[in-house]
Image (cartoon, rainbow, N blue to C red):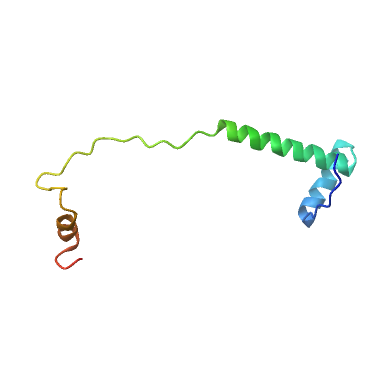
Length: 83
């Protein structure tokens, strides 16, 4: 067990005091229980989260365009003197 000082915002303090009353527990016990509950939820969310996956699809080439010259594509898209 470790003793430490925690600075709680007023709304959090009020909610913890109410939670301690509901649980019929000491403030210290309620604080520890609420922190344990929050850590369990955070761990569960990490396990449930899935990595974002991009599903590639073939887009093909537009007829008449060549992707070999980037400067030609920029000129086509933005007009003469775009560089």
